[in-house]
Image (cartoon, rainbow, N blue to C red; front, side):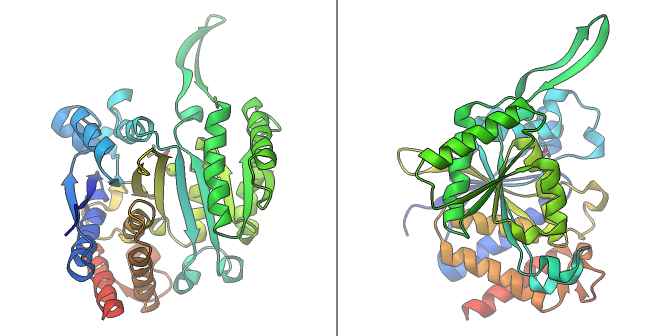
Length: 370
Ligand code: IPM
Ligand code: MG
């Protein structure tokens, strides 16, 4: 067999390890039934890394992440870490991965499954057939802008964060959005607050200029203020195809979009770097949900966002489109058969534990591949 693809699993904290364990089952299935094999390494991140090493991620794990084909990330954080120093808090591990791997394009698709129409708090007709993609800038903006922190201001204590974007940072994420839109319905909505923020004005100008001069005249481009976008997402989400936005607005709008689909437990994501000279791009895949410490260890977590994140890895890092389709279809089969984890209840169906849901997906894969 040809040289294996490499995966680095970073399960993290809370429900991260539980949902990651279910991915391992699907990976084993891929190896057995599709002859798609991976060399898998595992590492610590977040609170788990802090407990073992006193940091949110070690240099050694960072080094592994820089050199693997794809990172599969679970979740980080928990109440026991809430009072740690800024640089060692669990989130710092995730932010360091994003920054040092230069994963500037974060893809967060929100797709409704017909079987889950009733799980959403929105009316079925508003969300049926929904398929939108949020492209969030992930390595700049207020998450990383300098200066930041406490200062003295007219004899008073004050604290600042800085929203900053270079032209190149806006252009490269917009290019990703335009390119992806071309393979979808050809429509991009660029979102900022150009009515109050200078970076918003610059964002809009830069996106418009790239649209005009970058060879994207086939793409339909619209602009929207972020507050209006939040409102439009719950009013009429199907008006959107691809949304491109900055780091902070993307964080908020993607949680909002997630709930359109019924549960945060359904939303996968891919964070991608630039394509290098060898055609390779650094990549990290993670569910949009967090570590959910309140249900950790109880077998209640929904592993589907994590499994769908693995499907995105198959698609974007390994160009295994058929295998990605297969995993996504298996998830759909399981939902259509009425199988649900606790977060999806309220619509009837059969309640499964995390592990049972992983097994159900593998059984659905068996059927599809038979
Ligand atoms: C996300 C999360 C992270 C973010 C946290 C955990 C730092 O909310 O990926 O959406 O704010 O980016
Ligand atoms: Mg978030």
